Length: 355
Image (tube, rainbow, N blue to C red; front, top):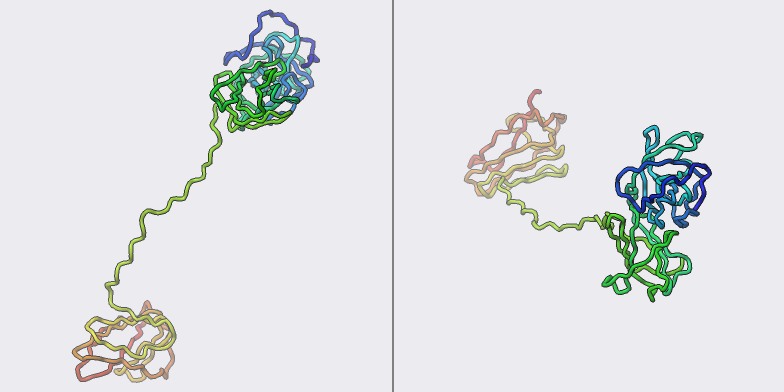
C-alpha cells in the first residue's frame, strides 16, 4: 500500500465499481509513483513480473478486498498510445478508476512532467503462457492455511481446498492483502487446490504441500492445457521389401582383375556374355596377324556354340604392338561368330573405329 506522490487522488465519486468489470472501457486519471512490486498491497513478495508487463497501483475505490490483484489492464493515454500493466498495489484516497502507474509505464503514455493525464482502460487477459503457481504464507501449518496465487493470466475469483482427492471441496476467505485463508487449517499438510478465475476457468493443483513459504507450480494456466509430450512414437513398417526377381538375362562373367580371360567352355545353347572391366586385352585377330589389342572399360563378346559338345577359346598371345587407348563409346559393334564343326578354337578380334 502507498500514497501517491502526486496530489491529484481525490475521491469525488462515492459509488465503488467493485471487482473486475468485464471488458467495457473505464475512464479515469493516471499518475505515477516510485513503484514496488514486492512491497505492494498485493503481497507479491516472491514474484517477478514478466518483461512484457508493466505495473500499476489501483484506486482503493476499485480495490474490492484485493480481488483485482494480478489482473492486467490495457491503458490508453491522451495521445492514443497504449500500455499493458498488472495491478500489484493499492492507491488509497485515489478517485474511482484512478491508476497510479509505475514511472516507466507513465513515461510510455506521456511526458512525466505532465504529472496527471486522462486515460481509458480495460481489464484484459495477461500475456502469460507459463503455468500459474500457489504460494504459502510464512507460518502455515495443518492448523492454519494461507495461500496466494501468482503468475495467473486472469484475476482469481476463489480458491478451494480438498483433503479427500477432490471428492469434496472446502472454501477459503480472501484477505485484503491477497491471501486465501482458513484460520483453522485443514488438518493435513498435503491438499489439492482448485483455483477459479473471474471468467470461470478452473486450474487444479494436486498434492500441494502446506509448508511455510513454499511454492508449487501448476501444470497450466487459466484457459490452457497441461503441457503434453509431442514426441511421436516410432512406427515399425508393416510390409517387407519385395524379393528381387530371378534374373532372366544371359549369364554374365565379370572380369574384375587385370588377368585376361583364359577360356570359356560352352556346354549349352545359351549365349555367354563376357564383360571386361579392366585394361586387359580382350582378343586378337587371326585375319589380321599382329593386330592391335584394344583397351576398353566395357565390351561384350557373344559366342554362339554349334553342335560341338564343348568349345574353348584359348588365351591370346601377349601383344607386341602398342595398346590403343580407345574410348569404349567409339568401339565398333562385335559380330557374333559361329563355331564351325571342324574347328575347336576361335579367337575374336575387337576392331577400333575412327572417332
